Length: 86
Image 1: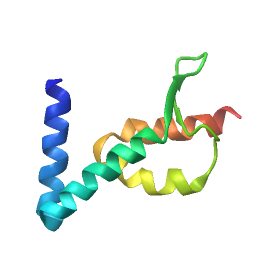
Image 2 (image 1 turned 120 degrees about the horizontal axis):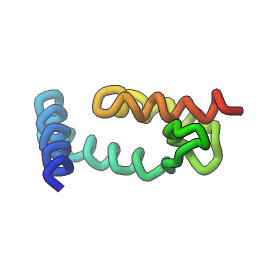
Image 3 (image 1 turned 90 degrees about the vertical axis):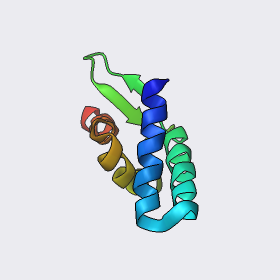
Image 4 (image 1 turned 180 degrees about the horizontal axis):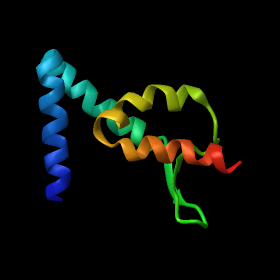
């Protein structure tokens, strides 16, 4: 829980510095909505897989990528893994 609280604090602080309170609140909602659009799994080789239920719709991967690059780059790698396994 401490890591979750720290992440929330950092997300809000970063967004607040860029655009103020309303922008920070919007960013927090967007991050959570983006995160909930994906599912996480593991391949038989132990690689992390992070994908949408319908693998491939660029309209979900493209806008989510900047958030994940900033806050958890390993998720971007996991987003690409399903495409390399095909």
